[in-house]
Length: 101
Image 1 (cartoon, one colour):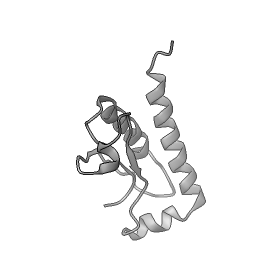
Image 2 (cartoon, helix red, strand yellow):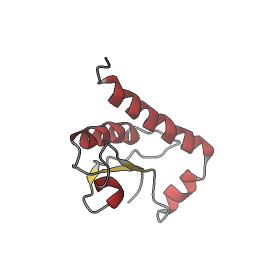
Image 3 (cartoon, helix red, strand yellow):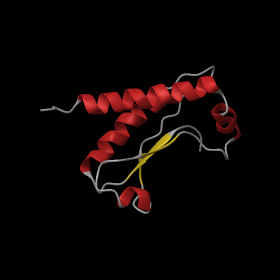
Image 4 (cartoon, one colour):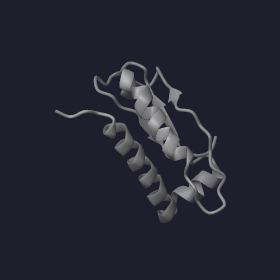
């Protein structure tokens, strides 16, 4: 496994929407001859931190330290900034769909 992936629990209906939105931007990451990943968000019903929440939430795995390429990328500040921007854009899109009173 390589690249960022998003984990969610179906306990709250918004989790899957948030996970898909974030994963869309993480899959678009372009970085120095790096082939983009094409992951789908993964539902995980056995993770306590996801199933115990009463509010929407997901886990973003930004990479896998067991993968040599991911480990090297995660040490680079430029790559970290790209990850942050992708997550930011996903959160921004997710919240732009809400109507605030």
